[in-house]
Image 1: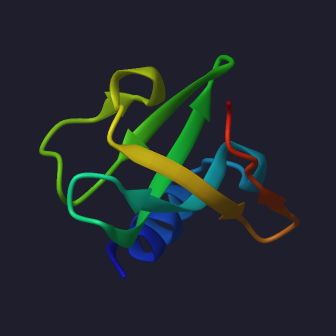
Image 2: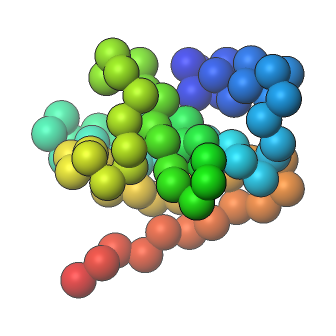
Image 3: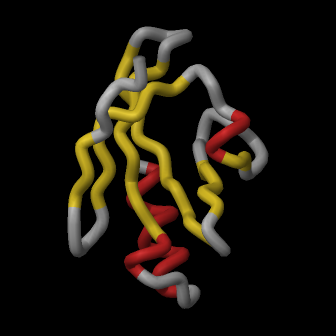
Length: 82
């Protein structure tokens, strides 16, 4: 998957495990699950996604509902916001 490949490349370039998470999301437009990469820099999350050409702030993407995130040291279950 592209998200895993991006994770490995950024790790090799010096990003720490704490800065990287593969996020499994539900694409609300297409109705399918999808994996993206979240990169945390200075407290902000940026999304690298093969379906979006530019790097985006996580706050700028509204059509994804996160399900869970993983990296080499932990996993996080995302709860829906009501």
